Structures are given as structure tokens and as C-alpha cells.
Image 1 (cartoon, helix red, strand yellow):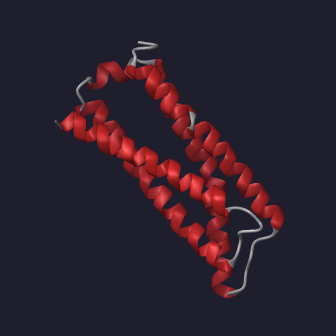
Image 2 (cartoon, rainbow, N blue to C red):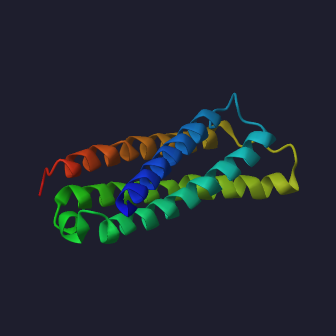
Length: 150
């Protein structure tokens, strides 16, 4: 039963991360940008960070306490590909997070602040990279679950 619960929570968190990334991408457009949007992006990015930490905790709990055990995961190159993709997503997400935090700081001083179109475009490109690499994670997970690479 604990494996079922861990797997269920793991999947729900992954869907949450995908949803937050999609929401951030939808908001990260010059036409949609406003002071309210900057505040909203900050909230979404905070949720994204919390979900990323949660997925690490739950994911590694699955490795150590799940039905398959650590030998299944730790010796499977698809597991490490999945971890690598997650790491790349995390690294790519640093720049958008820093930009959003900087925008919020400026917004506190200037209630009418809206980021420059070029900055919005640059952050949007980073989000697109995140989303594309993030899409590899369930592919590696499906391969791993089917014993590919084991």
C-alpha cells in the first residue's frame, strides 16, 4: 500500500509541476504582462520550487521504500537519465526564477512596473527549454518501468 501511495503522490506532483510550467509559459508573454502578472508569476514560481523539492523527497522515498527497491533504480541507466533531465530542468529554471524575483523587487518600488519585452522573451525561451527537457522525464520513467536499460 505504501508503494501505491508513494507512486500516486509522485505522479500528482509531476502533473502539478507540468501545470505550473504551462501556467508560467502562458503568462510569460508581452501581451499578458502586467504588474498583477508579475506578482502571479512569483506565486507560481514559489509553488514550482516547492513542488520540485517535494518530487525529490517523494521520488527518493520511492527508490528506498517502494516495491522495487534501490537495486532496480540505482542500476538502471534510465533512472539516471531521468535524474539528469531533472537536474537540467532545475539548472535551466534558475535564470527565470532570478528574473521573476528581480521583477518583483522592482515592482515593490514601482507599482506600475512591467518587464521589458526583450526580458520577457528571454525568460520565455528559458521556460520553453525547461518544458522540453521536462517532457523527457516521463519518457525515461516509462522506459525504466518497462525494464529498458536494466
